[in-house]
Length: 354
Image (cartoon, rainbow, N blue to C red; front, side, top):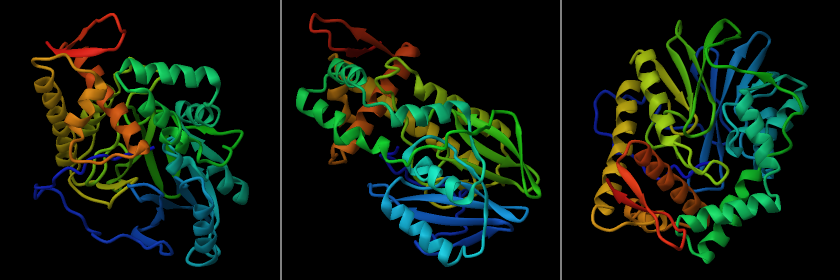
């Protein structure tokens, strides 16, 4: 579930990337003792997802599983016949319910008859996404986009191809084991602290091994791009950006700067505090752009999308993310009194700088 809409310019010497190149589709790279890195293709502008295997006794714990399509199954079949031949998957851990991460969980779990781990909210979100195309929910989504000023043609695109990717998962395993914030998870010789954070996804799981200075950041802290933080029709007034920034602040306080950050996309890196500061600054810059645009004239979210995403030509898939992310910034600014709502008889939401 990504647009990963903007790369953030990297200028700090505090960020280091030990692996500037990534594994090929048929390769497995060891980046630390008992930690393997795999990279699978995605059919989007963001064209890959990282999968990690952690040594776990006689087997390997898999963190995330790839997109729910035939190409990903073929890639896994080639890996299990090649560099992973003879390796057993002892358990599947999925960080969050977006289809590039949970998409093949059911297939892997069935193949290896192994247990499946997620946070409760993420598991239930996955179930929701697989069953979300009811008529009532489509009507609600249409009303949501229209209230934010999207015309009927754009709304039709967003309700079609723009959100169809959410169903690109094989059926989820019927049972799971819950990962909860503050708990511990022992994988082989390592003990991980379970951290969950909202914003990009409601309760995304991250794993921190203090002894080995190893942080599996999922999509919460990425190496060179910003994770999508959006608001969607089922919770139209959610302050997802506020939740995301709060999560980043907590991570900045918890993590030492010399941890190896192992992200869901991009490459592993050092310099987590610098990276968190860049991500926070990126969102503040967008808020300032919105405030300037709404300084003289009240504007809809649809009118604000090109203010923020003026460098991009967006297809339906990317437009959905751009709209969701723009509304996340608007809701955050409303919550902090930086915008106000201007009410007009047509019922469309317009925003003015406070």
